[in-house]
Length: 271
Length: 288
Ligand SMILES: Nc1ncnc2c1ncn2[C@@H]1O[C@H](COP(=O)(O)OP(=O)(O)O)[C@@H](O)[C@H]1O
Ligand SMILES: [Mg+2]
Image (cartoon, rainbow over all chains, first blue to last red; front, side):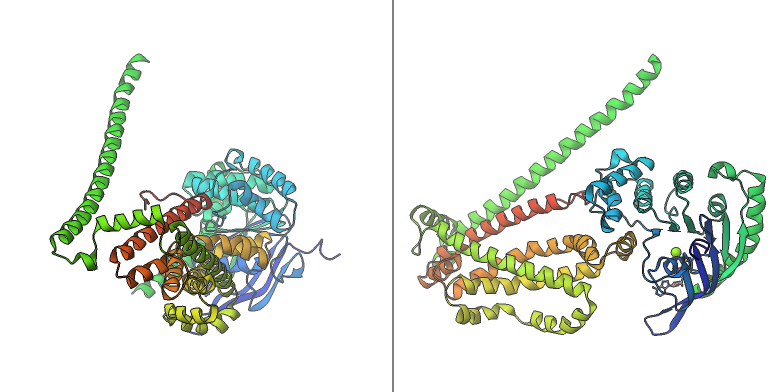
């Protein structure tokens, strides 16, 4: 079996071009080469609009690459894989389902019996601390609670590939730190491989084993940094360590340039 | 501790006063609004009655509230020329409900199907537009020829009136489903069928319900017009007969009865809607 030794995710010269309404081709990402090992937590940072979300949709199978190859578990991606979990940037919980029913959705969609789905859902709701809220509807929850529902709904499917698209960007700073810690705890028990997209460099260093810096759009991988901070980490504490600051400075010297390029382009467009 | 609790006690009592005052203000406003509503009604009816009695308007053509009331009372107590009033109401309601149910079912089904399947929308889109552009009420006489004097022709008129608003809302609802929700459902493992039933239809229901409110009115119109053109019973026939005997009070009385029926149906629908949309945040001040 080649599967067991192959990396969890591999992008080989992958690119994606969208057809714009006027018929022209718009390249979102190009020549992406990236490897995510099994059980590895990889954070992807890059300026807004550079193509981070597009990269995730390629890995998830929601979109197909127009160039190159995307492999998950050594196999080319064809459609949406069963092993993939995706936490979206915007709220994607079903507003007409209760909290419990939202978390049950994944197992039910995959054919689990109701009783089993309920049991698994209750287990994950307990882990994210929402047991008391299982009868509520999403609009009756705070933003952080809704995000935890989304996490539980994703983790309940036991994904070996976990894709997260700026999942905490809409939360306030304190909630975000809390959620990051919770994510690390949940992830530690699963051994899944994570690709975590963010535009927040601090968040990426605090969470990841590896930080991938992308260029201004159309994005490609600019540089990859290994984060050698020991685990388990608490995001609020790890930020204060000298090594953290060192790494931050090093990565920012690479990322800052791309952010500047993007900003200048925006200024040109606005003018 | 005591000084603190004393300090706390005062600010608590003030907001409580204010809350009570606010509640009183709200109650007073509600009373005022309802009082004025009654006043407007009384003024309109009073003026109408007065003008008719003093001959400012012709009571033969315009009738007057007291005569209309007498007419309703006569119908209720002694029945109409075509049978008891209850039977007439029921006949119309039966046709309207039947037509409404068929129209809604067809509208929702086709709306969702065309909203979900691009190919179907491309093929049938132009035809739906052409049919919708037609003034469909002129089909009523044709249905009378096709289906005869019985309820079938009225049901058919109701169906064609109900179908289009429901269809367009269901279509729009299916089109405007949050793409994130669909992507999320697919990632979680939902098949196309599951996406349709568990994501598209639930998110289209609020669109569909909006159309249900107006479309029941349309169903009543379809039934009444059908009856008016030719029938053996129903409120529409009551209107036609009253008109034939130059009984203007009868025409108005039938209208009043119809309005009451329509309002009752609307109330029932709102009740169902409230139960169905428990998951929706209540909009503050969304009283209707
Ligand atoms: N479905 C699409 N059709 C056309 N262009 C798209 C589409 N999705 C994304 N893009 C474009 O691709 C680029 C990258 O988008 P995205 O991956 O969302 O950026 P990021 O997530 O890094 O902010 C943007 O310029 C965006 O306008
Ligand atoms: Mg994005």
